[in-house]
Amino acid sequence: ESTVEGGLHPDQINAVIRRNQGQVTYCYERGLQVKPQLSGRVSVNFVIAPSGRVSSANVGHSSLASREVESCIIQKLRAWQFPRPKGNVAVKVSYPFLLKRLSQG
Image (cartoon, rainbow, N blue to C red; front, side, top):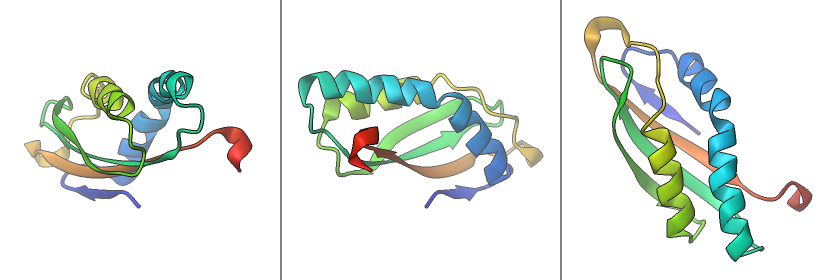
C-alpha cells in the first residue's frame, strides 16, 4: 500500500511510477542473473521537491535481500520527474515494489 503526504494526487505519482516501471524491472532482472530465485517486496520512501524532482530516496523496508537491486532502484528513482506539487510543498511518498518472476504467479 502506497502512501502520499502533500500536494500531489496519488494517481499523478502512480502515473510516473508506471511510466518508469521498466527501469525497476531492469534492476530486478539484473539481480535475477545473480540470484535466479530472487523475489520480494521493496518499500521505497522518497520526497518530491517543489520542483517535481526527487530530493531524497531510500529503502524503507525490503524482503528482497539484494542490496544491488535496491540501490539500483533508488538510483533510477532519483532521476524521475514528477509534476510540480500544488502549494509549492515537498511531498513524502512511500511506495512498495513487488518483485517476482512472472512464472511465480
